[in-house]
Length: 608
Image (tube, rainbow, N blue to C red; front, side, top):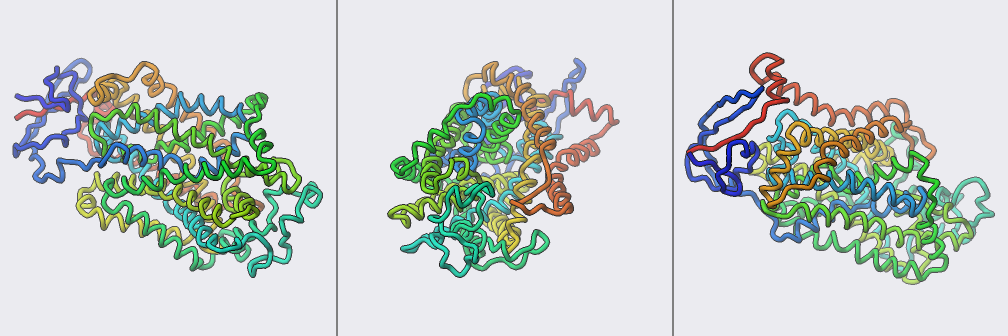
């Protein structure tokens, strides 16, 4: 009898893992005998069966990254997305400036990095996507489907934001930017030139960032969105042909990038993951030379420790660190599954998560130097121009750029940055779907190119709803419910499954087999106690703070909130449904089934 382990060592039976990635070996025997050794209540018993070994090399040898840098850039490109630019700087400013970094960094170390590390190790050891990775504890396979569905949902609307960036990029290819003045067919009679707007003009009615009649605001809402032609979510209209063409181009880029798996996507990220840093540096250098820039940066870094007494600041820090790193979408598991078995994923986790957070902080200087300039130009306070989300990157920042010498150049590079930030993040989400399902259904793996096209085309069809006259309302609903509470719930179940059911000790032994050392006590405590507690509180906070859905002054009808929660539940229900299904197909009484699932320690030995 020969016992096969990943490190080709003969080990005592109790050291064998049920999840050793057997696909690493080209097994020449036609048959292998699987002996399942179960230990329950101190009694061991065995069950054996004979199964055919893989007949084709395709099922044995898994594709790997061409270079280590391909993997690192892919992870960085996925994690560093639009939220690093349009959300973190504003949250930092709003929640006490430098004081916000205290809860942010705290949650990075006790929850963000441990979850990031866990997913990389989980994917690399098992060499499977988000669903089949749960061979370690099959009753939790439903959470794999949950995160795959969520990644698919996000693609429905995230590609639309990329299409907006592409539209703005094309619109920037002129000598005079179209959002500079009010002399355009789409402008309303109330459009006001920026030079006529100041603190006296606005009074106490609204902040400059919320004023809807600037040329930049009207270009976004009346030219791009056509929101003035819709009465709400129940009045969508037809897709806009200009945005449809942009969306087709975005989907084509994604499909082409993922066509051949990581061999092709790993090369695309050399452009998409590095370009944002070049552009951010260019924008920062230009930004700090503008009048009022230092006032903006001082406002960004101003330390107000009293803000830490507000629980909302801690909630914002927790949700930002979680969504910024991107754990739970199945992407990190999918990317890591293409690593070499002995890759140091511990170092990768520390490096890439740190780069992501440093990028968020760095982008704040580029953003607030320009916001300081805007406040100076209009003689208002920083708080009157500070905003987040689409309002920042599609209204305030483009308006500031339009007033600079060489505005066309800066507009082009800015929207190229947004385009590349979005593309590689969307690539990651699609790869999670493709890898997760193709690993589970071999027919999809054998027809990867066709499946890639099907996923891309499917996301395109649903995304058409988001580029109608009322499409922004559909996008807002999906953004709120598709990956809010549901993704927090999914990662919570994932953390519980790995730490409590599969076991931190066994998971640590898996990591030791890969890298030659076990995770320290800090990581094991975080995985078992701190991270699950953090996620549980995040889920509760997400539900408690969930108010009525709205977009600016428009309040969504009650039925739309019901539709939103139905979307969220449609992914979360995979967890209990699959668990119940697994219980039903197991032999024995309910008590025996529960015991087998919850307390049995399984070890697989392979015998020739």
